[in-house]
Amino acid sequence: MSFNPLTEKGINLDEQVRNWAELNVEPYDKASVDPYTRCRVIAMNGIEVEAVIFSHQFNRHTDVPEVKAALAEIRRIEQQQQKVVNWLIPAEESTLEVTLGYEQEAVDLTAWLARSEPDPYLRQTYDFGLLEDFDHLYRYANLYELIEGKQAEDVVARLTEVMPGRPTRVEHRHPADNIRKHYDRHTVDPLSRLHALTITAAEQQTMNFYMNIGNRYLEPVARGLYAEIGMVEEEHVTQYESMLDPGESWFEQLLLHEYNECYMYHSFEAQESDPRIRRIWELHLAMEIEQLRIAADLMRRYDGRDPLEVLPAALPEPVLLEPNKQYVREVLADQVDLTSLGTGYVRDAHKRFQENLKRVNAAGNPSEEVIDIHRERFGREYRLQTEGPHPVRELREEAFAGQA
Amino acid sequence: MVTTAVRPETGATIKPGPMITVPADRLVQDDQLRDFAADSGLDGPFLADQFSAFIAHERMGLNLLRTLHTRTDNPGLRNRYAELEGETYEAVGEWERLIEALGGNPQYASPAGRATEALDDKVTEALLLSGSADPLTFEQAEVQAYLAAANQCVAQATLLAAFAEEADDGQAKQEMTASTGALLPPARRHADWATDTLRTMAVAQAKHPMVRKIGEAAEQIVDKVRNAVTPG
Image 1 (tube, rainbow over the protein chains, first blue to last red):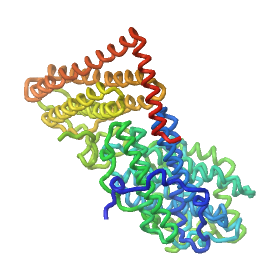
Image 2 (image 1 turned 135 degrees about the vertical axis):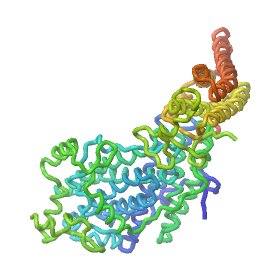
Image 3 (image 1 turned 180 degrees about the horizontal axis):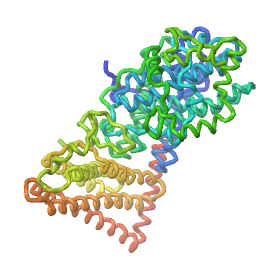
């Protein structure tokens, strides 16, 4: 059934404010949580963080008191929503376990966005990033067993496979090769617009997370791995935010952020298996509906535009977190050797790419060291291949073992 | 009914610049624009791009007038902005009619159109600094914003006249000539009105300091109202 948040009744902004006890929610149970519930929590935390950061940027570009006050009021609520969402993650979950959750979310969210993306170029961009986050999951899974002596299957279940993607050591492109083309606001399919906002928020949160927690480990290989993958996340944010049309006005962007939050909460409440967390998604959806209404009013007044000229008549098909094993395998088989040149994708290891790799990989790669150390200690790598051998012969474990 | 915002639902198409991706079914290339104003002897793709920019500016003018209408505290200006909105709406309709008559698509967004929209967006965005201005200064800035937009309309209609003059005799020339007659006089009136209004506002303040004091008093009242409706 179609759902149009512009015609739904939300919760008055004054009634959205929660006290400290309400913000300090009971975390989920690490032992029994559905891995995709964890992914939804991670995704919505990223969406809320983006809402806050965008609003702060907007606030720095206006001195209209009414606009600043409205932004501040909504932002306070977004901050509270972020606390409620992110505080669902329990302290019992180690930093590496949360990291595995981040990468599982990156893989299955990106794969779903790619599968449903109507624009072929944007779809290619998702596929390109997908193989890199897929590889990060494998590297962190090996680090996890090295440091904590546990297996990533305990975190990701058997929903997402763990094996090499595009090797992290060849993901380090020259910054000029991480920019991408953007959609055009006149012709863009509404789904493409929402997808771009979602992936930008998700990858930005991953980037920020690694920026902050990468130094929490004693082991040099762990610190090195977070630093190396953290730099790839910088590339990913550059890539994904480039997809947004820079011609969108501040109010258009605000409206789209609020609409996308409605879309994501609406998507997730429909599939959430944990009843308590589903109630949080429902509550936040009702809050976002009112925030969207306020954004729409601001747009009418300060942009002179009708939100109906920007938004679709109803929310698109919901975003779904589900296994994408076959899809990932197909993309791996077809695109593992891709890199980029400017805004395009190439198989050619061009000069700028090679020079950058030579420079940053000069003293080796933590992403390779972690596998070498793991192999040394356990006599094998950590992989979780539920669907058979790796689709790329050169990335099968025996191929690496042969090299050693 | 005219289109005030080009989007997929209205049948938007685009000739993308190098940094834009567009689905194949929305893509327009120069070859498809060769027949635009075919009997004019002028370059069809160039004209199509120009006219896309012209109509984009009129549409953006509607947005500007809507925000001026809702934001001004001056009842006289509010009424005038509403009138101008109606006349601009008619101008959008005239551009749509002309583009269709020349064999084009009013839903086509050209690179020139995107550039025009970006410029016009920044004019509207400039009004987001109204917190730095007293009410009279802000009213003046609003009229200046409209004057910039109106002058651009005059420039566009004048260009249209030039295209008509240079065109070979035929249907396209007739259409462009007729549209010039419909678009140029009101555009000139609008620019003249904005110029006159600016002069009146500025000279009144220069000659009669009391006008400014009244303005300051109005500002205090506005602040009180603002504080009453803005929490915290």
